[in-house]
Length: 181
Image (cartoon, rainbow, N blue to C red; front, side, top):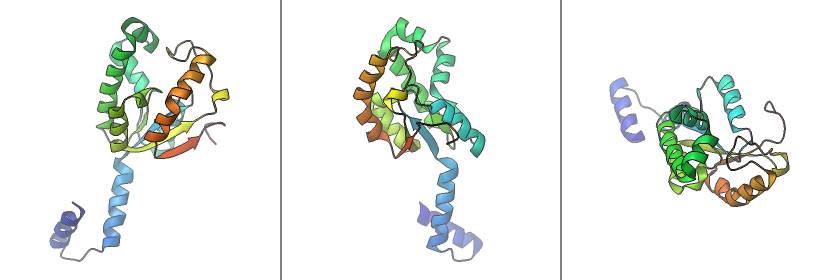
């Protein structure tokens, strides 16, 4: 498609366009249109980073967990307890697909989005995937999160998911300090 676009532009403008210029334009377009996707453990800071990055970049932030709450009309824990993990993952996959169909966004995913190979493929096709890693001893259990209510839950999730985060990620970010750092 780059060759066709180049040929069309050269014909329309009646000037030659170098391969280097095509590469610059393509890279610039990709920066503006690709999504930036944040994955990682519950409580690692994905939502906070997405909001901060949105302020700095002027891109819209999308929080998949927030979208799930809005779609279902109930807190995630309530939905999870009432309908189970399978139903939750189905809603999560739908909302991820919707978010990934947009462009130029910063998307904070839920911690378990990587449990589906289809989700991982969708993430990777949508843009750059950043694994936000926080040391396990810095993650806090949270009663509002259905699968990470205790430190032992977090340890179990970490063991189950760490390889999936690495598989899905294009980049790794250590988030053991403040959001500004």
